[in-house]
Length: 134
Image (cartoon, rainbow, N blue to C red; front, top):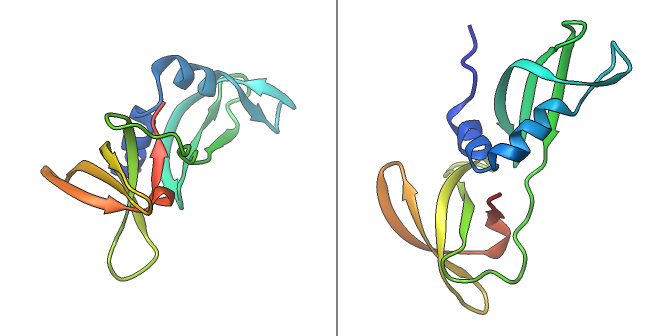
């Protein structure tokens, strides 16, 4: 049996405010019904920088899915802002979401503090590797 959410998907799902999570689940297109529906019994996984939810249509019990694309952060980051850092994993193009806080902004990089597998780290990262939360 597939776990409901991969660890990376859990990080992204939890970063969405509860009100918006409800809206997402209640506004899913069902190709079987030809209408908007509510998704139940859903799982989540990350593909690239997108969260993919797969579940069941509450009306016809057919399979439905919803893709939530990662939103880039704006150029107006401020110290203290909560972000998701897409940490590049050595040995390829794979990235993993990590909760982070903006500490400072420089001309070329953003200084963040992040909880990287239980260890608090400070990193200077490119703006493109960050995603806003909520």
